[in-house]
Image (cartoon, rainbow, N blue to C red; front, side, top):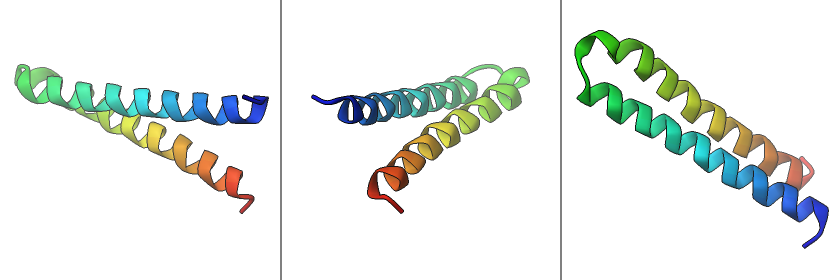
Amino acid sequence: MNGRRAHRTGTFVLSLAMAAIGVALIVQALSANPSSVTARLLLGVLFIAAGGGRWYVELRRSRGA
């Protein structure tokens, strides 16, 4: 595996991990008490957006677009 392939794989894995953390935060916020829903929900959405954005940028960069 060359360096570029390893970087793409690592970016993909970390992007999935960020999205999974976001989903876990949202699930935890919806099942917890109502006072902490807004902060955890916002963080969950932001983690999902960051993971998806990171993956999208890597796909665009790898295609040369």
